[in-house]
Image (cartoon, rainbow, N blue to C red; front, side, top):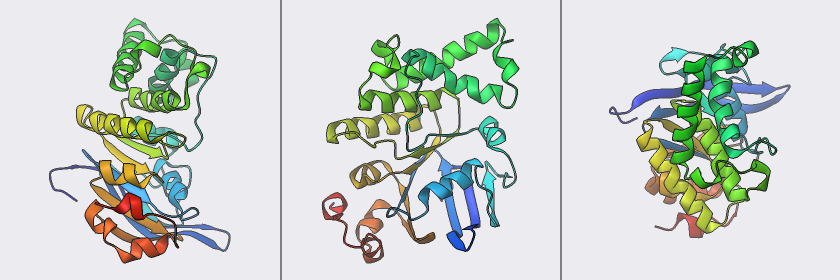
Length: 263
């Protein structure tokens, strides 16, 4: 890891078992603040399981999870969120009948509410101002100003993906776990999404761990890439080394990565 980067999420020797099936085997991973880290691998490799370990939905059988230098292996999802870890999921979770702005505001509200929903009903003026500030900044970061008053259900897939990103940015997290955020986007929308990711990372001084099947996006925005296959971390390096790795190509078992992996 670059010594100039801040500690973010670190997994050490993480093993996850579901009955007799080993979903993750002695996995090590570091996703620091101040950069975009990629996590790639074939379908069924264990990428989403790793995310679930990272944000606390799954507790590993063996190994430790550290967040900003603190052991959080046994900490809850809400505790990790309050500490600064945000996450999106493969399936978009958007409230279609709410406006874009209201959806985005939920990102901040859900983090501060935590395990006490009553906080939402007793928020004072200063708290409401903070919500508005975080919401406005996130909407601006994702270029959604003109859509702020629109009902979320009326948005295109690309706009909904940006809304989902804006909502997690509004939470004020220092590290984001993004699970296939470009799913459903065309090539032009994906390039635009990638440029926004890079701007958000720089402007908000946060780290991103990105699970993504779009190799062109991964290669263009990630400075460090991990490759997972059958629950085992088989490769780790920069985009150039991933591009040149026979191990990575073999892991995809003939999937057509040639175009995406070209310099």
